[in-house]
Image (cartoon, rainbow, N blue to C red; front, side, top):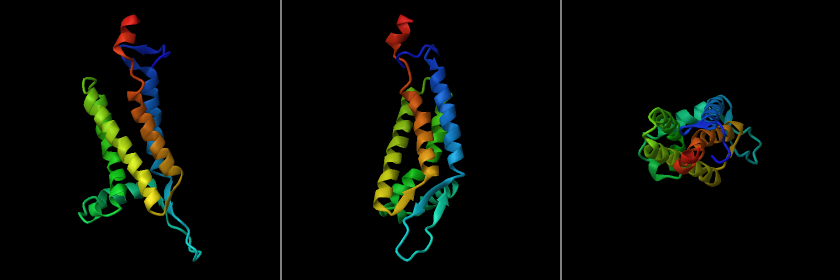
Length: 156
């Protein structure tokens, strides 16, 4: 990261802080309201789901082959972000696994985009929990963008 003076041998303290803060935001999001249905003209109160409930529904429904052939497939992909973030964090332990880690990070971002596309197709409104979940994920993977180039390290 240009201008970052806290880096030593490609381990940026800013990236570590960003990832830890993102992980905390991500974890908190599971306890907050994540989505609600659009209120209908009948006046019934719309259903509100917490983040943990959304995660459970998507992972369990991913075992149903019929879901994969419907518009709900985008929602199921969002549920697989949670196991992928665990894989991403495990890959962080091994610095030599940069490309596998970046591929997993790219998949998570692609699945996030699929989640937002699902909100466009299906009448669900994202709430604070979903927004924090998305921000937390993006903060965790943003560390990939904060890595310094080898040429910058040679100048130091």
